[in-house]
Length: 364
Image (tube, rainbow, N blue to C red; front, side, top):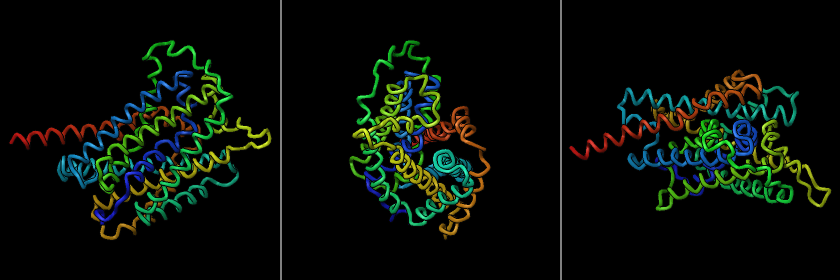
């Protein structure tokens, strides 16, 4: 079943960019400005470098064990018992991330659309769309991601270019006045955003491998880094570092400054559409990764039967996870180490053990 699933390099690239930049694009400038103010761009660059390292770990693991995902690699490297425990932890992380993004999805609509509608209805609507996509499989929503990728990139670039005449580059000065280390207090948070590509470890075995597959993956990280950097720089040069830190969704406040022909405005609706599409893609790809991981770990013969129970579990967990956006943002800020643990530390440990075993095998 798994070997027949195939996606293209561009589809893999689209999934990485959308899932990484989509949900964090709205509030990342404000959160990073809280740590570094006008030097938030420095945090973006530092987090992007760690993101490249993170991606390299998953690509190296796949190179050592071609045709296997993170679940199979864990069991092969550490054995059926210890590897099975680690595989379960990874699956738990996929499940947990899905519920957190669902929380973001519902809280955004409560604030930006209609606070009267209960959160439960937003959660149900979101999970039904994603469960439908998971039911039809990776190839289907990967093809959809190509269109979402093009729409997302064009929309973001158009926003930043239209606002060029309103920027104040002097808001970026002085550059790194407190040194290179002071702004890095928020590095863990930046790392957790750029590490939002852990699902790559589950889909890379389904990519039609060519000589440029790795280039597409690194290119996706480059596009993500560029879009995040432009988002942070635009907010800083328009509002200033301190003011940016006070916004809930600075990107929406940014786009509300757009005026075309003096009469056309309210382009924030376009940004909302892009964000919803990106959020849908991220929930779906992590939903699929969790479902695929459970299928491989438990050797399920009819895996589609578990989609509905998982969807119901996502709704219940998301409903009682946090009470509002403030608590959600506080968790992301204070518990960024939790995401980095699964995104980078455990995969690095797994890679080190795999390299040692490979070296010992070659040396006899």
